[in-house]
Each structure stands twice: as C-alpha cells, then as structure tokens.
Length: 195
Image 1 (cartoon, rainbow, N blue to C red):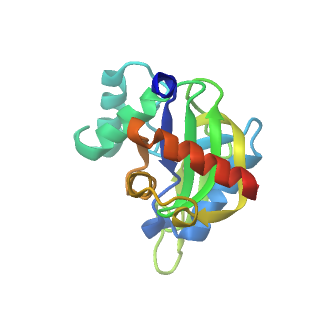
Image 2: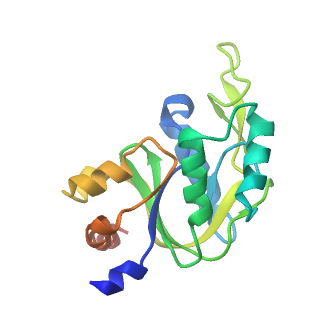
C-alpha cells in the first residue's frame, strides 16, 4: 500500500469542551464554515503559527503565555506547522463528535477578523459574566469534502479502536497514523453517505 504513504491526515479539535461548552465549540465551527474560503481555526491566542521558523514560534509562545514552549503544547503546535496543502483534516467539535472533513487548500495563515469570539467560558469570564473572548487567529483554509449540519459521534462511524483513540484524544492537533489511514478513508465514505 505505498500509495497510502503519500496521504497525510490530521485531527483538529476546535477548542476545549470542558472550558468552552459543546454549543460554544459548535459556534466556532459555524463561523469558520461560513468564511470564504471556509477554514479550520485554532487558538493559541495571538501566537503567529504562520511562521516557518519554530524558534520564532517558540519565542512568541513564551512571550504570550509566560511559560516554556515544551510538552504537549509544543508537540501540538509542531503538528499544526506540519500540515500542508492537500492534507486531509478531520474536524472535531467535541471530544467524540465529528463535524467536517476537509482538504487543506494552502499554507496556514493568521487572520484576526471574525475570530475574537465571545463565548461562554472564554478569557475573562466569571460567574457574573459567563462570556469571555477566545482568539482563534491561526487558520487553515479548506475545501469541505464532508460538511455535516450536526456533529456525529465517531463511534457510530467506525469500529477502529486506534482511529477512535486518535479522533477522541484531548490534544487540539494530532496526526492520524499511517496504520489508521484505510480506516479513516472508510470513515470518509460513511460520512459522504450522511452529507
């Protein structure tokens, strides 16, 4: 199956459901899917992830968050930086629900228009004022191949425990392993029947 070695697939989760809530995460997706072209936005505040040099990203990250650029944030950002045009992205709204699958159209870029989103649980929220701002400036423009009106539980689409594990992982960005590519392609076919 050498042809599968040229297929790169990624899982991107839009926000943390625990802090943003399922409806807020779906709101982020609705805004992103109405953009022209549609996009997949990710956060990390105002760190510019369109930069090619990882050292520049690390410096911006450490300045924005006042913490070392290491651990899970570093590996997730490195994964985001590795996404290229024509890669396939599985977009998750919550931990176990798929909302879309797209093909990346171009290089990642930063755009702040429309992506300072006031949502429950955002930065600056309190019990008196549950809304706060979350910045989703870093984005990938995509062409949707599956664009679902309702998020679908992934367990209803595949029995592959490895693929389910990747799609439901807590990280924002993860590569889909080569050993799961066939199952991921089957999942795309199942989703096409629904859309």
